[in-house]
Image 1: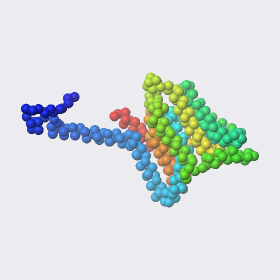
Image 2 (image 1 turned 135 degrees about the horizontal axis):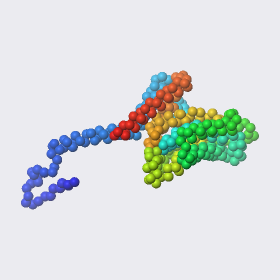
Image 3 (image 1 turned 30 degrees about the horizontal axis):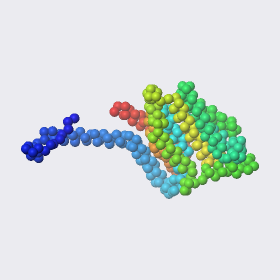
Image 4 (image 1 turned 180 degrees about the horizontal axis):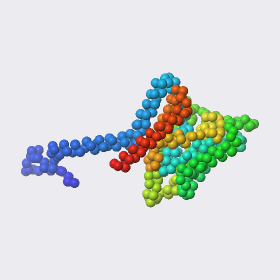
Length: 373
């Protein structure tokens, strides 16, 4: 590429009057401008077709649902108390959805999250666990729930990564066995926190007081959801773990050739979602003051739906934490609007199913467009 440079001389002609042979002519400038227009248009289309455009579309959808709620339910929807209620309802699904985003982006799926939540909530609220927590510290209940969630995730991950079991089948088996084990442990009874059989429940009462507290008027459950979302965003977008998750989900063989231990990383992804399930179990206990095998029933459907609505590809290789958070808020707000308008659960289920179908169809269309461009 030649560089144009003018050098003043003592005896030469006036440079101002000399026509520069390499300077762009009027036609050249018009051609360059004409070529730059499609480039700028392409950059704009790429921006709107990327993560920014997808998240903007989700925000618009959320605002439309809010507008419908404000019109149909009036002040009952627009009140501060109702907004807090929506956020509190979204918190448990949101925490599990953050973990599920990693798993789906990594090319897997976990159908057992609801059952793991139930098992963790039952294990953390047995009379034996509460007695030990009452004698020592209520953090023992927290440890029990997180340990159960991580152990279930470890079993899923090991059998999927090293046993070559299909994730759908493996997690379906865990769904059935974890729910059954929760029923056996609890004898299909609701375990109250603190247990009425405890002679002195001061220690366990500390657990309940902590998890039901407010932070500057905001329920702790909502704060936990926000913290988990921020931590998940950082882990996904700013660490090697997040980049490896995208690589493993996009092309496992290429990731292996690049030096990534795909099997170990897959195990870590399922342990991560298991920990999120343990945390969600604690949030269930805090909200209901009980541990029961019915906690988390059909939670996996809401979680997967929120992740897919948020823009994470079911085939792996692409995910977004911000989109997942907005997807959770969309489903939570939609359910709230249905409840305020006295719509039954069946109608809500039909609407959610239709939204999932539309989201998957849009994903397939975007995937085909990305492969042809």
